[in-house]
Each structure stands twice: as C-alpha cells, then as structure tokens.
Length: 149
Image (cartoon, rainbow, N blue to C red; front, side, top):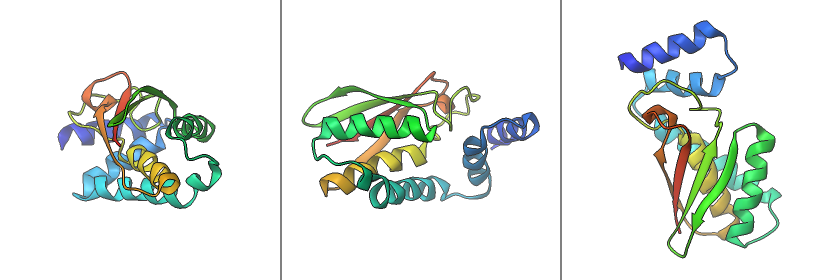
C-alpha cells in the first residue's frame, strides 16, 4: 500500500490534471473492491451510452470507432495491434489513468477495460472479457488490453 500512498500524495501535491489516476489510486487506498467497481462502471457506460453512438456490427469498425471515441473523450490514443478469431489486442497510449505514473506493481486501467468490454457487448450482444496485460502501473510505457472474442 505504501507505493499507492506515495503516488497518490504526489499526484495531489502536484495539482496535475490526472484526476482519473488520483481517483483510481484513492479508491484503491480505501477499498478492496475498487477494481470491480471501476470495471463495471466503465462497462455500464460503454454498453448503455457509448455503444449507441456506433452504427456498425463489424468488430474491426467498432474498434476503429471506439478509438475515435477514446480520443474525443480525452482517454488516450487507442489502436488495434492485432485481431483474429479468438482475440483482439489493443494498445492505449497517453491514457489518462496510467500514462507516466510511477511503477506500483499492478495494472490500474480497470475503467478503460470495462469501457471496451461494454462497447463491444452493447454492439455485438455477447459477453466480452477484457484484461489489461501491460500498464504504466507495471512500469510499461503504454497500456495493452486483450479482448477475448
């Protein structure tokens, strides 16, 4: 917990525009269930709100439009690294939650993972599991999400 405390205090003292990161770390500080809460909040918003803005059922086009939505919302630059019948691998650069953060030894972009899952579920009417495999919290320079198709 000390690593989280140190990073949270640094963010608050710096008065940066990294409120999403401060929120995630603050929730982590006080709650064991924060990751699920953030994932499901993102999933609900993605499924019930954002997916309605996308007018296709083609997975590649959905991911392309999701990238545009992430950019317009200031979440970061999302791109598709690879896609096949079993999974899609997405890269998020300059993400608001983990970009440039100190290495704390774990992933922290639960909201973004849930958002991706919810958008896909809302459009394709099936369940998608999205997991983060690379993250600023692990010391990576970008976030990587694996979507099981």
